[in-house]
Image (cartoon, rainbow, N blue to C red; front, side, top):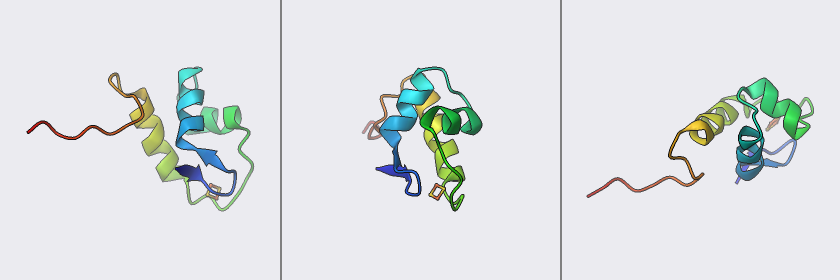
Amino acid sequence: MYVCICNAVSEKDVHSCVAAGACSTRQVKQACGWKPGCGSCTARLAEVIGRAQAPDSAGVAEAPAA
Ligand code: FES
């Protein structure tokens, strides 16, 4: 799924940037070659970065235990 439509950046791209050491929206944008766009993706980007930084994150949400 795309995080940023304007730059065609996917969640996978963001996870790759975080794995390579980017840890803020600014660093991820630089690493992904983000160009200025509409800006509507910033909150979503922060959310995806947070998930990517979670210790048990594999980029996939897990179902709660029953
Ligand atoms: S959706 Fe990311 S800049 Fe427009």
